[in-house]
Length: 327
Length: 290
Image (tube, rainbow over all chains, first blue to last red; front, side):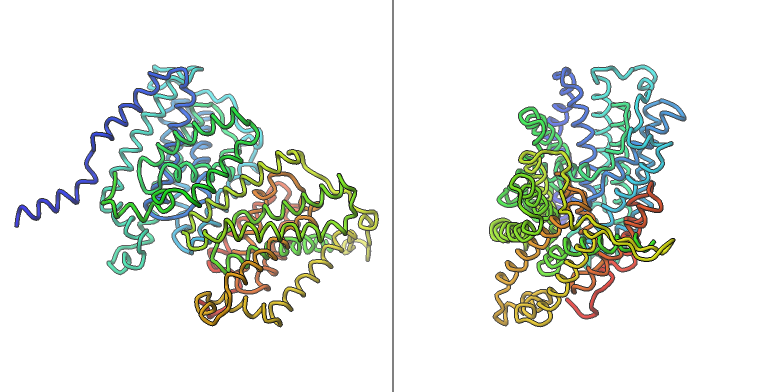
């Protein structure tokens, strides 16, 4: 009896345990900025996009909300951090907290609109939120700099010691550390009862509400959380580039992050990281071949991926539960 | 004031013609097609290329734009779109975004990224003015032509949908594809024809509106939101819903851009979010339904 229940417990807890390959993967990621220090700007960008995709994964992969306006929170975090650095104080860590808070606040405010409605409605509302923010940022150009953006932001040294250098070495390490911390948080959440209930309601909303769980509250919580992480990603981008512009809210950013996540795998925490690496390398390679037309190949890739792609890439949420769950 | 209203109506009618195909696609197959704007752009560019490089007259280009985009739509439906119908919405969104990216880059490559202008024939460049002062109504012949064409098209489509055998089959298929198929209605073929006509209408709308809407390779991305608004707000169950939604959207957009130019599209988006929160299924939905 006790042996049976302990094996059940072991099986239930297995997905949340760290595997050997995960530790190796993170060691490799940690070694990347030291081994390829000449590519530090690229590593920095990959880390930021991975964080952004991770935040979308919480919403899309685990809660099943299809969002076409995730750039709204990215932009909110970026502008939050930029304004804070300009007017209050240049410390990067406090700025990061402010950016995260800005994303979370916006997420909390908008989540009541997201939790209701069908897929199409949700698609339109998320897209609408990003567009409204874009228009607002354009309108209040005395604060945001309008179409010119905010340039030449001065960010203070990290922990009062490490200056952000031109080669982005400090920036890449900083972004990777933030990514890792965010990953730990996301991993903890996904394997918590909240995460389990999210996956359950993604698969069958009606049954979850029949069990007596509040679907809407849970969706709102995870949406706010995803928004906060997206805000952190936006803040990182602003701090490491010293620049914030209207481009942050544009539709193509929301589409790109969706693409990154799908390339890496939806509903899998490493999907964002893997997707960001593949996407950035692909973008780098394609834009060096055809600088102007690389979107064509990205588009073709998407179409082919969806049409004839591998089963696990086409329907990620159907294979996830069958394989007993992955970290 | 009246002039603005008239411009808004012309704009709204254009949006209606452009978005109608999308409304049918969404209603019939529950398929979210973000690439619909690409067909409109194709129509616009066909018009430009024929007029500028081959010297065709404006009127002759319009039917060509319709036919070419309709054929393209039919081909794409047969080859690419059909496997996507049963897929989850996320896949459909990704697929159609991919198509849009391809269309944008392809047009950029073939024609160039600069905005295109249409050389309207002389008889469309005249202007009529009625009344005086604040209530003066100025109507450009071009906009008048657009309104007339679109009204004729809308009436024709309404007649086809309401009076013909094809129309009743289509309505049956939209209501419930499974039962319709069980009754022997060739749902796939009905849908193929509808998709082709919808694409053709988008192409025609793109060609008609090339001068008002402006034409450059980012057209599908810029107007995608507007088409989606028309469908999401208007509902997909009748032709009247999208029509009203398109008119409201057109008038709101023109007025908003005139009176509060800096807020621009802000009003439209806020209005859309508000309407969608109030009626998530769209403004004009039949009470019955699936």
